[in-house]
Amino acid sequence: MQNVAIEEIREEHLKDVLDIYNYYVLNSTATWHYHPLEPAEMRPLVFSGDRRYRTYVIKTDGELCGYVSVRQFKAREAYGDTAEIGIYLKNGCRGRGIGGMALKHIERFSAEQGFHVLLASISGDNEDSVRLFEKNGYEKCAHLREVGTKFGKILDNVIYQKILG
Image (cartoon, rainbow, N blue to C red; front, top):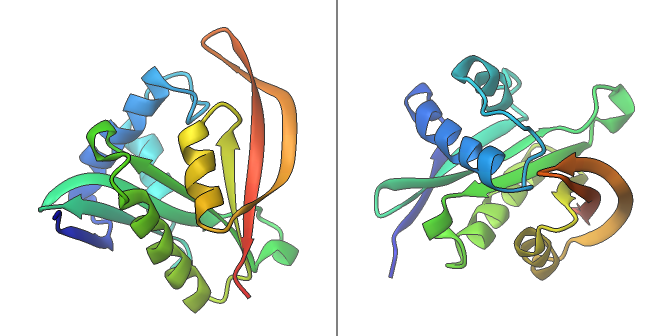
């Protein structure tokens, strides 16, 4: 059985987190960036400066295998009780229940911060993410058709939500 630990990101984790994210930039539609990010571009995405929004690294048997984040949905006051979440795992860490553990962790943290709704914005062809969120009680609340293009493919964006209470 794997030993999974989830801890708040530190500066020393930035390179590994960036490598994971850039893998998805170059090889998938999980993120809609076209070009790999530099550390200076990634840093504000994972270190927001606001204690309500956090990123956690996921380690299995001491090795960093992914990260999960809760971040601001929109910069308008009325959205203050809503946040967006994201999970990125190394390829070898997928399909082992780690994403579900990370999702439960970020939900608990988000509830403690007073968030009422969590949203996940997912590429419509990302069946693994759709399955993960549906399995954990998220419901599709929006389907934006043909709003993105990557690798010459026109993409939909689906948004899943969970009301925490």
